[in-house]
Every structure is written in structure tokens, then in C-alpha cells.
Length: 155
Image (cartoon, rainbow, N blue to C red; front, side, top):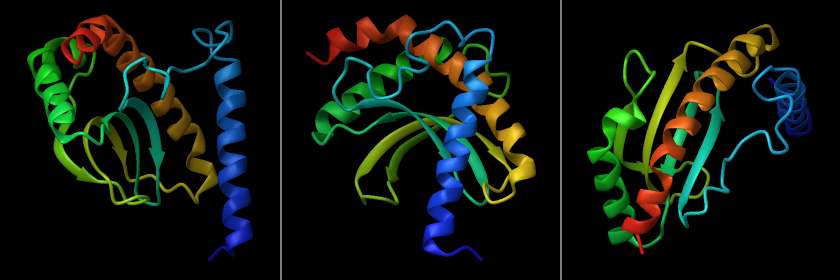
């Protein structure tokens, strides 16, 4: 069991080591910004990494506070499901309604997950890092293919 301070340090170590891993990855090492994440240019749309005691996820999250806009974006993405899921052999999970644990906010999520990994087990970090990099590169690429269309749709 970790104390609050030890857990904070473990999280810091995890993300710092992940950053170092990204810095040497052939597709990422020359990028000025490693990941798009929340800078999608669309309000309420973000790409996210999530890791816990039971799994790791790469997520496209629709978190617009305006429910109509959020649902409109989700429906739009459903139309482009083949584009969003391109390269994901088993497809993606589509979660129409998800309540965020940290804030309680209702969001829509499209994600892939790696089950059976525990963030507290440092020997599993390389597997989590590889999962994050491989899947975020695909999701980011697929999202950028339709970003401008989504942006137009939500105007």
C-alpha cells in the first residue's frame, strides 16, 4: 500500500518515464509536440491516456458540457466509424454515456484498452507504454483524418 506522497511520486515517475520512452520512439522523436491530446482544435474533444490498477486505455473523449453538441459529435463519429476504427483489429469500444471518476462529468468515450495490467507494477510499465504509443498513434491519425469535418459539423 502506498502513502499519498508515494502514490504521487509513482505517478510522476510513470509519466516521466513514458515521456522518455516517447522521445526515443522513431515516429515521435522529431515531433515538436508528442501528442495532440487536448489540443484538438475542437472544444470538448480530447485524446487521453488513462491507466489504473486494472487496465490502460487510449481514449477519444467527447466532453462538451452542452449535451446536444456532445451527442451530435458522437453521432457524427458513428457515421465515420470505419475511419475511426481503421487499424484496430478488434475495433474500438463505443461508450455513449460515461461518468468520469475524477469530476463526475458525463462524457462520451471511444477507446481501446489493455486489460490485466496494474499501474503499481513497474515491471508492466513497458507493456503499458508500448500499448499507449501504438494505439494513440493510430487513434490520433484516424481522428485527424476527420477532424476538419467534425469541426464544421459542430459550428
